[in-house]
Amino acid sequence: MDPHLLRTYVTVARLASFSEAARKLGYTQSAVSQHIAALEQDLGAPLLTRRPVAPTPAGERLLDHAGPLLLRLEAARADVVRMAAAPAPGLTLAATPTALGPAVLAALPAAGVTLRVLARDDIPAAVATGAADLGLLDGLAAPSDPLRVPDVAPLTTHGVGEESVAVLLPAGHPLAGRPGLRLADLADARWLDAPDAALPLAQLRAATGGGAFRPVLRYEGSDVRTLTSLTATGHGLTLLPRRTATDIPGTVAVPVTAPRLVHRVELVYGGTPAGAAADLVATLLDGAQGAGEA
Image (tube, rainbow, N blue to C red; front, side, top):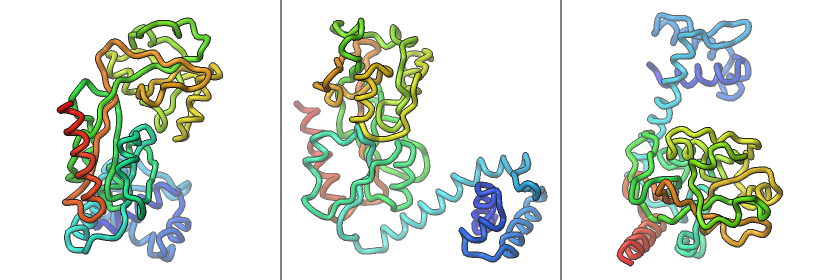
């Protein structure tokens, strides 16, 4: 399939409009219609209904494939450009908010850094396509176990930090005085769903074999201070790295004692880093090795 036709199809399907897709892509509406017709002829199946504009069942199936295919093409281009081009000045680092611990922040260069706080699922794609030089992912894992990174392109990952996790509760919560908590005992508690600011509830379910962990409030932001304020005012519990959960006014951080889990941070990059990116990689890997030996 011609990737230009595929990109046009994805744009039309997402915008549900031939004219809007034409404006976004810089084509005439007639050219967009020709692209869709050519793709339908190539595949031998109608992909879109016209009034309203919506994917057919075959078109829905193609959309499932189209995103990863187009991303892989962008990643391939970025990978070749990285090899052929001189290192760009400065450094762009994509990270989740809870991956930015003191060791990472202290290792950043004094100037020339662009820090992008992104959703976990967006970081591998940002690194693969060259939107970021390096990425920092975090999540729950058994000690020394790697995180699962989406297969968007050939990427290198290294663990650069592990620490214990804690449940953040309001100071007056009945369990606030406990020395430790089992996650399985909290499956039916009131939880905050904050996938971009806390450790995701899906990871809690996976760690406990599928407990409920039903959210009572969803926070679609990345500001950890807002998240902890929601817990302090009684809107729900959240799971955080113990460092992040400590000494927050109006809350108590109780360590998780079972299952045995850690908050793991992994460095992600494509190709061979150069310039400031290479320096930061070396610093973080040296720090991780030193912590492991200690």
